[in-house]
Image (cartoon, rainbow, N blue to C red; front, side, top):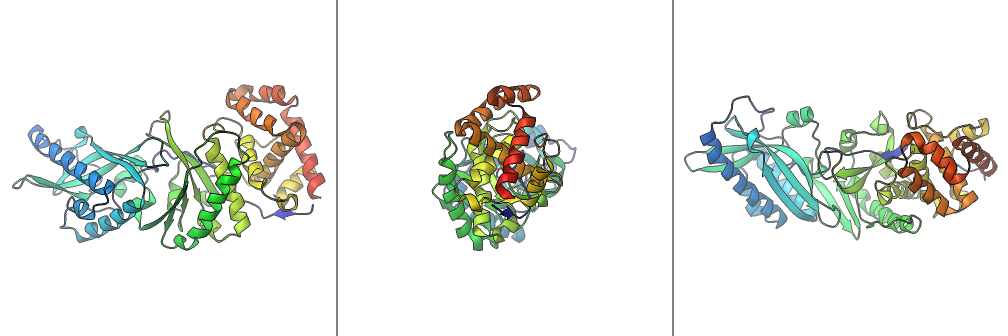
Length: 421
């Protein structure tokens, strides 16, 4: 079967620690960086904090109810550029399935700033049907205050300098006009340019969910948020990417913790396509999407297993709908197999210059397990290693498969050569 595939870029997951939720507001307007050290007198704080909380309740209610007039009534009209950006932001939010949107003011962070006050606000956003729980993230708000009338208004809900210094990243709906497409269990996030490919992407994700569900034996809700944008800003902002260069990734799936605490429960798992993949062939895009959907379906089950197993399973699942002669592999994987293998790809350098070979070898290690023992043994190995400490995983693999990792690598190499040369 002399069929090979183009050298793939890395495809994996990353932990989205700070980028997965509403920072409320499209762009910087009126915020003044880190709050000054001047403390706000208790009397002033006692006056303005209740006003801020009331205004934010009105703002959240207006967004959930898609009431633009009520929302814009919370915005300071004296800054036309900010007003225009808030109008874009409202249009974005009106497209999202917002189940819950709430704000909690951190009273201790209140400080005087030019023309009013800065304060950190914890924003709670839950996308209905896609987030198991609300996702909570901080944002720096700027309020103007008119002591004479006793009113406050939002004059800024983002501060780029503060976000960069504190590691906060924003969602596309905070930063630019977006197009949201929802079909069944898929919530697609596009921008004006990438929306031209929305139909192709949505069809591939919808089909991919069904195809992955036919193979993966675990229960999952078959719902996913998929980002397909024309720039790499969100990709570059993700934490713990599997490659040093974000541009080396064709796509990435990532868990979304409900809070910044790493031990916080997950709100869900999402995935992001690199812009270049929007111009790829339909079958290549579909295979890539099935790979990422497999990570979504597995959830946290493959978080602590060796990378070769997690990525190998995703690759193995991604090719199952394809005829045998269309299951392409990289030439570098064939070359590595032909040269001989004595070990499986290691976690530490999985996404180095040999990543294309690593993906192919990992896939065929899983293929070998299935051919020798059946699909059930592959899933058993995943379950066993997920419950085993890293230092004991080699021993557990030996126990589950009755062969060691070196023997599995050699057998996978033999089968690659027999199949593709």
